[in-house]
Length: 405
Image (cartoon, rainbow, N blue to C red; front, side):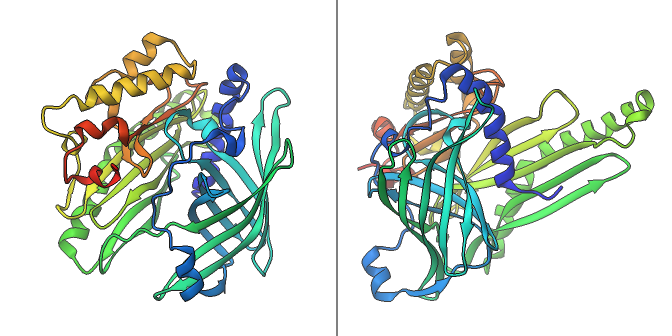
């Protein structure tokens, strides 16, 4: 079982889209560029004029997995995760906006080809429950290559996006996200696996690791990551071992059946030299009716070398949690999911309801796991609270102050 975060995300999209689309006819995430707000892109992009002055064009690597961000038509901001293997290229993308959305409807699938010159032809698609298949909703055609500025290589993808329903085309420009966490520091991905045939479990992880010439900072950061995931890993292994014993005793004929599995992935929602915001996604299957998915997050102060608490971002004794909750409740109710009591119980102003929070350029991103505010079929939900809503209580000079105009 080779870990593949794109495959994991695609699986979740398919599972949750079935229930969601049957109820809402896939009204979310399928209208293309016309559905998103024109929030300015705030990331580590290199200005176009600087690219033209300094960049050296190179061929893109034959294999890569990366994140790019930019805009369609200069105003519809998107983020794209791509994975290339030779002539094949695939991934997902989403429109960067505030408000509530189903995570199943958020991501739009991509699949296509790339030649040796970097010419890309990708089809985008969404799941159509009535026909039980993916339907084409648009396409990206353009050039993907690398540029080198100041000794650092970065991928760039430019071309035209075309919407299938009316063949309307718009230019797009995307650039690889590069996070600058400080001199002599970098965040890399460490892959590991743990397979136990006798106890019938498989565990695969892709976790962030801070590397550099400051052992005190890197060691503490990496140990914090290990502590965060160790509880979930321990619980999974304990259950898997007990489950294997039960099967061996009560259902010996299932001895050759696959055992329990868990995959852990992560994404960086925002980062600079002061902080890094990480969202962890867990996928596990232990033989039940369906797999389980859940999340947690780590927001880390790179200057103070300590985790960031949600409350520390705001003015002391302020009503920040009520502001966040009120916005989330209002936006979630617009989706028509679950029932009001369920939503209030899972998104009310309680600290435990907001364990998966992340800093993002557009706003404070809150992830509600499956069952928290709606059923498993309706899946996990996400709300991005715009910083304009939180501006009255954001701590002056704090980490969020840079996002407030």
